[in-house]
Image (cartoon, rainbow, N blue to C red; front, side, top):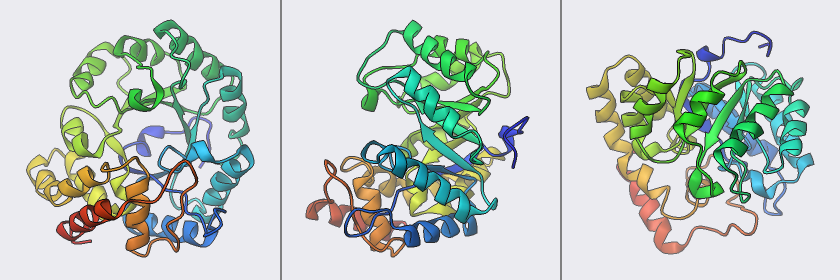
Amino acid sequence: MTNNFIEYQNFLCGSIVAMITPMDEKGKIDKFSLKKLINYHINNGTTAILSVSTTGESSTLNYREYLDVILTTLEYADNRIPIIAGSGSNITKQAVVIAKSLEKTGVIACLTVTPYYNRPSEEGLYQHFKTISEHTYLPQILYNVPVRTGCDLLPKTIAKLSKLSNIVGIKEASGDLSRVNIIRKLIKNKKFILLSGDDITALDFMQLGGQGVISVTANIAAKLMSEICKLALKKQYTKAHKLNYRLSALHHQLCIETNPIPVKWACYKLGLIKYNTLRLPMTSLTEPSKKSVLKALNIAKL
């Protein structure tokens, strides 16, 4: 898969997993489990893997570890599934360095988060992403997640950014479904990809015109999430909602504590990873929450 002139629309749709980063009992990257997870997604129809995102505990990895996870994921995937790299920084120059360092790795795109903590203006957000796009040929997917970053990328700014050639889509995780239609009306580029960042509302998001979801639930229900998205893209919404009903409780319970605490425990419980290790300041799922997640897993028949 080449990065130049890539037909990204073929890969940036459907069920894209925001994959966890497995760690051993000492907190080091567990590459055995990482390989197992990659094969699990390849075998169960996941469209693409997002490596080292929020769910992948990007904030607790140093830069060396960050690149190691991405490069190892690419190696194990061996061109069998596209890999997207979680990227970005609240320092624009650093975000540029990260994007450029990924150019020759084999990733098909970067998911670039809005600058956290700084709380820039809409003009500041525009200039931040514009600067990144001017310094890399890699396709950029904007990532709007106000609850995590303290800033909100508004539809008018998204529309302005969509005019830049290598800004190809957005992961919209504001939780506001009304934005789907607003963004679609404002954007003239019909190839611009709208991806949900919220499993609970993802099917509704697609029904309103989105092309897929970057999913936490797909970590443990890859086949079901893939089938739901395929049905939605074919506009077979009745069948899609019927399948999604099985996962409804799970979508909610994976938010019972801060992501990725619940989903990492669920991966461990299902035997997808060997250890349930998170790095501080993230701590293990509490006992009452384990019962709730386990009940949701049983309802989903996983």
